[in-house]
Length: 68
Image (spheres, one colour):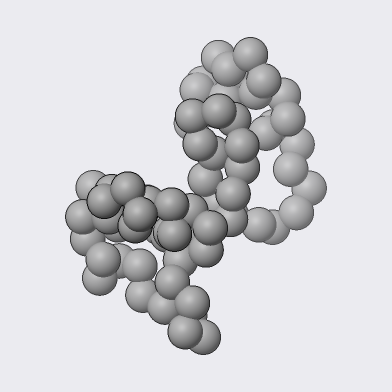
């Protein structure tokens, strides 16, 4: 993951995230949290293991394991 971030032309903005948020980066370099990422992945039919995306407080969240 570190090599992929370093290889990106905009990778610097992902190296020093000071918060504890976890999420995903899309193909345009836009970071999104697990909740937003789940909605996008679901709309695009990318979730292959929905059991790995259990809701927390009724809100679905995307985890990498749900994508492969």
